[in-house]
Length: 534
Image (cartoon, rainbow, N blue to C red; front, side, top):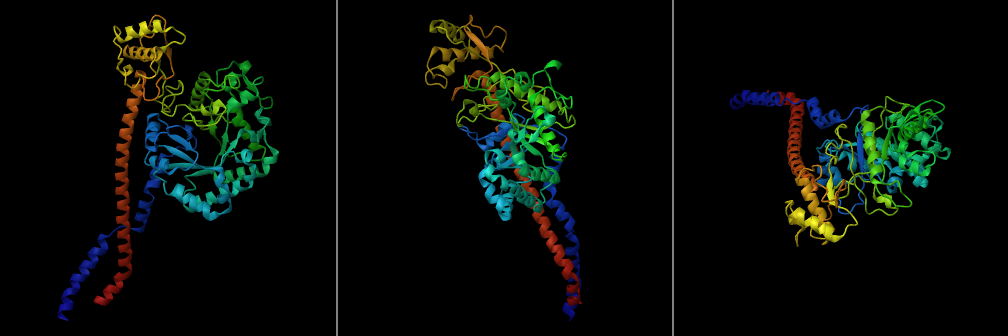
């Protein structure tokens, strides 16, 4: 008995120290669990802030790796993207960045998701819960233009969306990740004047319950709006200036005779037509999100003469300015719809017509498809190609004249002509015109694009189209190339640091969880231990 009484104070002291030293409470544990979600919520844009995003298609030769793609997005200050699936490599690459992403569900998955709640729950777990909040998934687009391109699946659309939403709700992500489905503009009939627009009556049995559901959960009506197609279908009615956002005199503005609202561009009219169509079904609290819009930079010369680089530049540049002006639409000046430009890269693997492969802002190698004029407009595409010009040889000149200019550029002009020597990256194609273009651009860039530095006695011309090809990178492109490489390096380094920080966060979380388990155990057993010891 003497030994037991001697040990008793010591045991009691040890138990008390252990009990009070583990101070983590259940509330603190829950706070640790929600730390990353709270950080994401702070980074989410407010509902009133409009933005410009880009769609990323993958029918591209030599598409960038996910890591390089994300570095390129950073370099171009693109913070919102939409992908046409839930590519795990891209979602992982977007982790710990400030880039928000809309993920998509292809039409061929609607049957499984619309007929099984468990399948929808599993999809959400694999493609949302597994990445969020490290990857800023902001929305799920379910199918694509289902009502018009796959009408047989129309009955599955709302059940699929409902099942997916319930899975988000069960995961407590329903306030962070929106869900909707993109529609073709053709679901709206008689879009002008907008006040007379209405949904195709044969589709109303599907559209009405859908927009009522969107109203209840606070998600947008996703619409794919292309003023290019409106103009092509109604060339005699819609002036091209209206389609391209060009400044108009009051007499050229479109006026809705019922509301007397003036429309300076086709896109605003299409957006308001959607609002009026919803209003006709007694739904007035669903905002419009333009999930696709753009203009092709190239088309068949006879069939698509307005698919040009100038028109694509004008449309997309003015579109970006219009969104960042935040002037809304004539019907809703307080709401500026956010838009996703179609698309980031030219999808050169797409089938005809020619325009289908030429909607991109960039070629697959990140060379700009054309010159965009968006400098000073917010931060989107802050590193755009405005003022990026090149000097090349003109077409139709005899080789003797070009050779003389080439000799001068590489000789007295002191242009760097090392890359057009045999065996070097720009030696092929081995002809005077190609070699002269490289030499002219080398001299032009060396002289700081000074007036008169791209002339060569009338045989050279300035272009905004990057003449680089294959492994041959022209001098005017090297700055962009080098900057991109720097961004790749810095992004990889930053990602590594972010992963280390995340690892430490989760390690702290695990330690806290273990502490709490001990806390609960001792709290439950402490009175019993005292009785035994006493």
